[in-house]
Amino acid sequence: MAFTASTFSLVSYSGNGFHIWHYKSDDAAAVIDSAGYFNTFASEINAGDVIFATTAASGTPVYGQFVVSSNDGTTVDVNDISTAQSDTD
Image 1 (cartoon, rainbow, N blue to C red):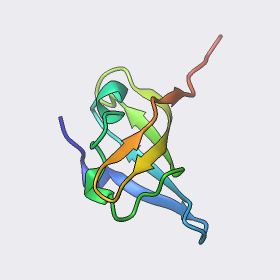
Image 2: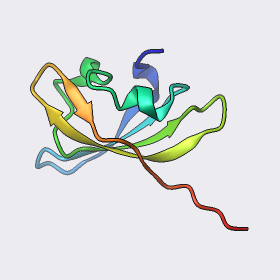
Image 3: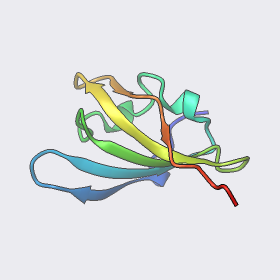
């Protein structure tokens, strides 16, 4: 699939170039963490930004965060997802 701008939103901006974003997608985390996935927002996303995400939303959702590892002004790349899923009950 492809990036969906309507489910990508700014949660917080610190004023020093750091953003916290939220993104919800039916795409798997392995698709989202491919270089170029977030290129639509290359002019707004900065290296070091955090993207909280719900991936595979229509199937078995995975919740976690991506950290933007690089943005050269054209290509945005994020690290692999760090999941926040743990439920022992």
